[in-house]
Image (cartoon, rainbow, N blue to C red):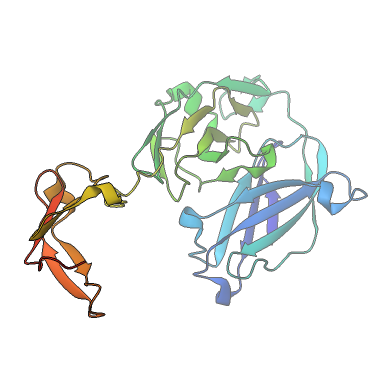
Amino acid sequence: MNIVAINSTSARIRFTLPSLLVGLIGHAELHYTTDLNIPRSQWNIQKFARPKRLFDTPNIEYHLGNLSPDTTYFFQIQVIIEALQSGPESEIYKLYLPPIPSSATTATTTTTVPSNITLDAQLNAVSNDYSSLNVSWRQFSPQEKKFIDGIQIRYKKAEQDENEWQLTQVLHRDVRSYVLRDLHPGVSYAVDLVFNSNPDITTHIISTKPIVIDMPSEPKDEFDIHVILTPNDVNVDAFQTQIKLNGLPLPINKYINVAKISYRSDESMELLHAFRVPNENGKLILDGLEPNKR
């Protein structure tokens, strides 16, 4: 594992997976704290995942923002493999984040920059289907791009804690949309942007307007049909039986091609079968029966 400060408020984490874990489903958990004396269960946690939660490469890189400048942090990363319910864990690493400088110097001029910039990205999200979202945002101005080195989308179920955010890969600052996949149908998701600052300018950029989007529920299988049949739905005369099927959606011929009727008389244990096509009202006619038999 290798971890370096990108600027005063963010760090870059790189690590290499054992080759036998490449191709498996899972995520990484970065545990971090400023106080080694507190229990591990009280450390901050940031969850990261590759697209589709698939570890598709042994060389992994994540960026962690929203850290405090002029502060020493301790980091430990744990890989969670879904099929194993656990995974390898790194040693504890120490990193000092430098203070925010009062000015930024370029080749031609020295300019005082703010320590924080708030930015409304005008986030929007539209569901493509029951498990994916197309997230989009506005184009950033040339002045804003001077502060932005990359973009990540963070997302979580709306009811989850703040330490449950998942992050996408780092996107170029000119990218304006990204598709989130493998989401859960019928669940509300909170979606926000994370800005990675330009390494030469230590301004912390904060997204001001995250959004909450409701994923559509999967539709009920329209062919999941429960036919209702009661004694009153069977009418018998001397030579035939009329059977009325209830609970069928319309048009009936779209859902039911043929019905199989099984029957026998009291005098025989032989079970007979007949195949009939219901009419537009859901009625079946069983004919050829013998009179004076039950």
